[in-house]
Image (tube, rainbow, N blue to C red; front, side, top):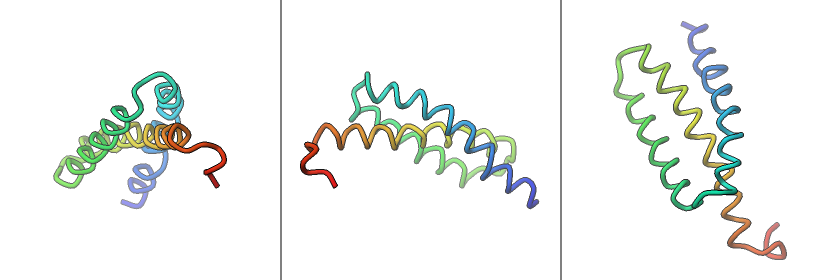
Length: 92
């Protein structure tokens, strides 16, 4: 059981997170940031909700991978929106 937990919180989450962060960074530069952020948060929340309701380990693993991808998009989009709304003189 401990080995499965290590996989779920380790590589099954962080590898998709790292790969999707690269894609999300490019989307943050090109796309509509507000809509992409709303979609990323909604998909992330939906994935976590389904994770809490599933009794299939295989489905849980797949959802955990998707959660890594959806969560990866949130940080670059938030940072890009902060840069849009606040001038450099107002940022700490």
